[in-house]
Length: 180
Image 1 (cartoon, helix red, strand yellow):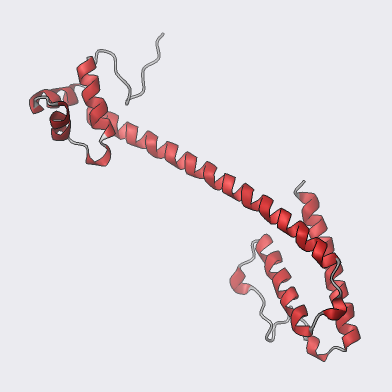
Image 2: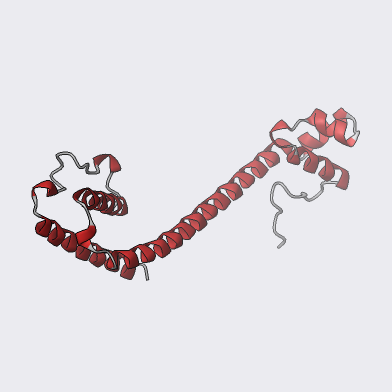
């Protein structure tokens, strides 16, 4: 048994001239009209109207529009997935370079404000990774999530920075292992 053609394809019993007129109508998009088809093909408007009625152009053109919309959405979704994959690969490569730099970082050379900036950045990244609303992200002023390092001695700050570096390396290592 022969398959029925899609609504926007040539239909059984549709003459070549009627098919050409429908294809013209279909391809006009949202500005389509019987008059435009008649003018474009230099056919009598009454003839084009008869073809349109006999071959259900309006319904077929709507099917075409829906199919084009479906294809466009699928293409956009695929493009979005491709972009996300590409960005993830770039982020992973950048993270590897950052981790290499972190391993060479001498905590004793960091000021308290450097420590706070590093901590804020890592907290923000971690919250984003877990989908925590960034509006809830911590700030440096009075946040219970960030200790007040101004009261710590240099030795205590260095120890805290070393602890944070180890935690960050551990977390990055865990995240890196999950993506493989």
